[in-house]
Image: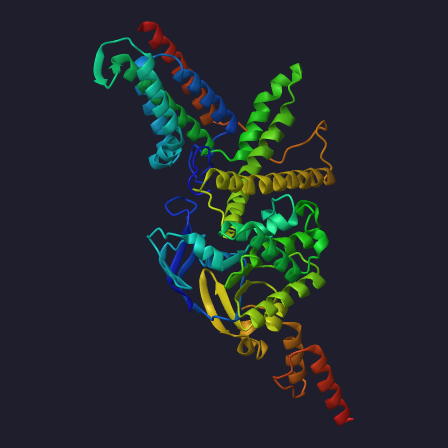
Length: 266
Length: 286
């Protein structure tokens, strides 16, 4: 579990950590929409400054964000190559072999990279500062109004919280199985095609077996404690919006409006 | 050839808020050709320690000497496969490593990975099955449909089939019934006495340590607190109490007898012997 940082909760204590998850989720959604409005470099600059400020306030390290970016690297390189091959507008900048690189290709890619960076910064502000359980509570509350049109809000929230709850377990399990199979001479990193298939098989089969086992155990444990999906349940933790949560929502809405205004102007 | 740790530290998730020092400056030598028990509380670093022995974990600092290999911090050791073939590591609850269609295939999987031919691997697998007490009728069954205890045997046979010189077992009897536990421990004892294999057992069960092991290493908070032979360790309960370990029932019984004025010799190492001695002394007095 050492190197995977994207979407991970960091148990710190900061004003952002203490905020209401509903406010944080809504704020994040507003900001994500704001990112997708073509507000130009000024707009992105403003969003960047705000996101960076939030990260500082949440006492997260920028290294953590950069680490989260790493899995995106390959995708970005791929995008860049595709863009270079496809986009033929703007002035030609330079030539590599048979391919002419145009100004727009670079700019288009840069746009996407910047958007991705901003998205990761903003989602990290949410995921790194909100306990998975609080997050699902927030999601459940936000989905509540849609129950009128038969959206199973509670079930969705329970599904998400169970899924989230099992991610670290499954990662740990995977590593345990990898270690056990490596002890039996499996080489997970290299080898011939046939050996690699065998290596993956020796990981997948036990992982599935244990995942099903866990699912069954959990279902039994929940039933034993009287859990029934349709039933009305009370909550141990009751969420309450405070002044700062409303402030966040107002700020994010203002930001979105500002971005729309900026894009109209240009 | 020695098995030695020299100033070994191991840090999980270094450089993140999840940083955890599991081993701290461990210097330790383990006896070859003996059964060594590694004991200590949960989280004392036992499992981390043993995973260094076949280089599943590499030291963050210091070096590990095992067989003819030296694994030093900061270097990427090559050809770990040959080391892993000679240091067999059985994890806690090893039954989750089973995946093949048949028991025989699963046990032969290890040897095959280390370059043994198909036929020889099957031969080794049959020998290993015999050792753990799995009959021929299991050969063609799916390992996934066996009972917990049988799965455990298949998993351990999978390591034994590799014929390692050093066998490392992380709580091999956790969750087995008393009978299964006894059979397993007898098997490890036999492997050590008859084939001269070096055996390391991580365990919580003091009765096992007392009955089957030669040496004891007590781990505490990532450091070996004590290393001694079993005789010394269980001479009386004082050392155990010092280490916060409940001594085996026999030792406690002996201590109670001594406190009440009986003379009990150190040589007595089983319940029957103690009972006879007690009967003799009572008769003598009466």
